[in-house]
Length: 99
Image (cartoon, rainbow, N blue to C red):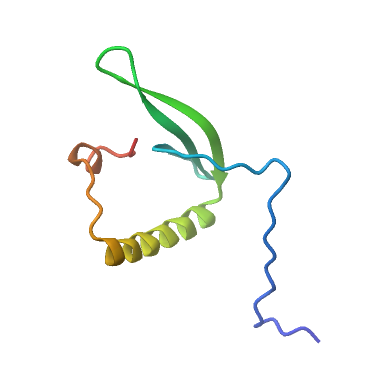
């Protein structure tokens, strides 16, 4: 008889098209059904602007988005406890998405 209080064994494996990349830009959009994260790179543009080159978009359920936010919050706190406070550019702390 199965015990419903037991945690299932979790096996993680990478799909054949798994890839890793560096992102210094993420834009977040949301709807009632999901969150969408567009990851990219901020590159120097021609003139005074910055060009954003997105390379991956990920949809998350609201539950997964909240779980991710909690995991990131805990990991950022652990990082800062180990390495010191992470400083953000003030223009990004009040205006929404961090690029």
